[in-house]
Image (tube, rainbow, N blue to C red):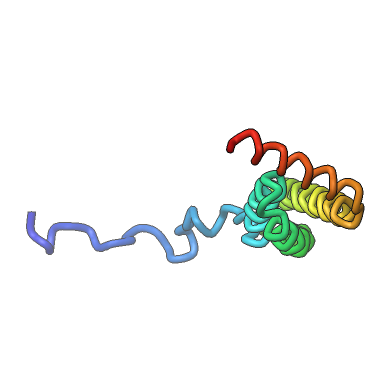
Length: 130
């Protein structure tokens, strides 16, 4: 076939009748997605207890992003309400567990009797190893 015998691109259709599939689909809010990511990361960090302070920070960021994601999901053409709610719930759990862990550790460290008992147990274990 020669170029002259082929129909021109878009011949027979008007410019207004062409549809792009990407334009018609609703897009998930980036803030909602990041809220879920920060919520999961924050919760996992808090549950390790060693990285609890990182989890607390990630949880606070996740709460902020979850609220922004909820507001963005109300816009036309934007989805992600469920994702934002999931991220918000996980972030709130991470913050609550992190605060509870911090309060527990602070209470334990400020209790001299508990610290003395722990020190005695460590000393006993050292004596057994020698």
